[in-house]
Figure 1: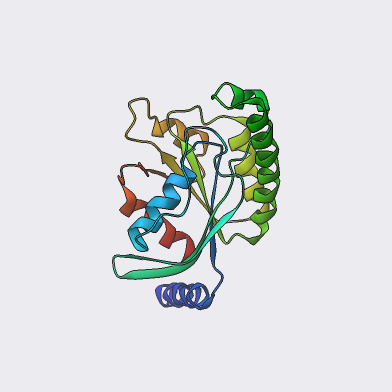
Figure 2: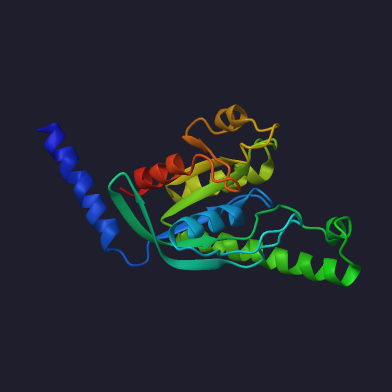
Length: 210
């Protein structure tokens, strides 16, 4: 009887999400964690096209971007959603940081202003998200104020979360550190750039929306 009830609930949730036309999955995280690279990987895998511009300079994505009707299939399952790529969340944005990346003063100040606006926009969009994928650079320290703030906001809003430890192709990658920082979540290690372990990532999405 318990199994019958559980199967019924699973089917019910699947019908609810499958019937929704505006299911939104958002990519959130600090700058240069690989959100836009992951967005491009997902869109290339399932649409044959890219979604976002990628750069080594922080805050390349400075406004929310949406790719509608992305259909992912895995192991006989299917889900269609709107993919939302958001600007990197930062607690401080200083134009001088962009000067160090080679931008001139005018460009640096413009980017800093746009990046600040983008952070505000990204936070506002949180209330529209059905699932959030937190994309972290697995070569960086996960115990940052930004990461803790992002996850804390998701917990407060009771939004389902998938945590991605990106850049596992790098020698300094440390998935265990990410797992230790957020033990309440399953952490999926991927390389969005190389396309490594994407099948496990897609499976984790199905687990969140079923």
